[in-house]
Image (cartoon, rainbow, N blue to C red; front, top):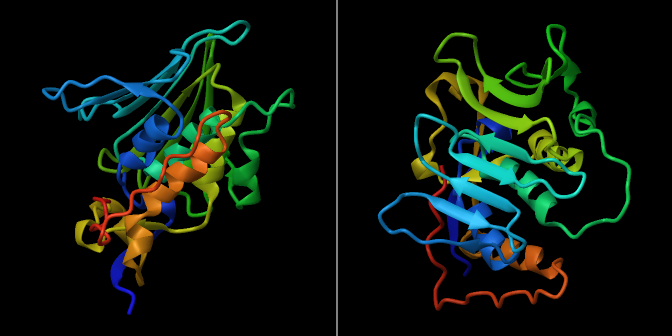
Length: 257
């Protein structure tokens, strides 16, 4: 008899809460070869790409964005940076990091980062350059002011101080295919799984959220991250996929919220 566990499936996915940071950090290190420093006295993670041109910082400080990704200038590509607040679902951030670590596709035309959203029914905004989700909660904005140019993704249930839930920032020179990876994950209608015992949906957005309880095989939850690591490692050139861990019994699901 297969052991099953309860999982909460949360939709829309941009209201599911942050989730487990390991969904991003572990594959970057184990599948993509990013190196990390270690300071047991500091509650932060710093990962560097193999070419040392990109740095990811995960710094749980409530005063600013928790996730920051910075890329140094290379040739004609100018420096760029992105950041994400704590409640940005890791599965949506992974849309960008997975695009960043994918093998170079060769010369291709830059994708339209808005196209995945339009195909998902997002509508043009009337008061700014960007798009708004069908429920009006999430929005993409492109801001240009003189030399300043950047894109923002905001989720909010109202304009009052308690309304904002999370925000993402993309600097002017962030490659279009990376933003498109993010917007594809943002537009995906699939709900996100969360631990029903640690469901941390912001109070002000609960009435906008659909939560469905489901029972799934425990092994699927236990090995979801391992399977993700192997999938990303398989696409890396000259980088053998790591052997999956096979404990005697399925471990409890990772902390997800």
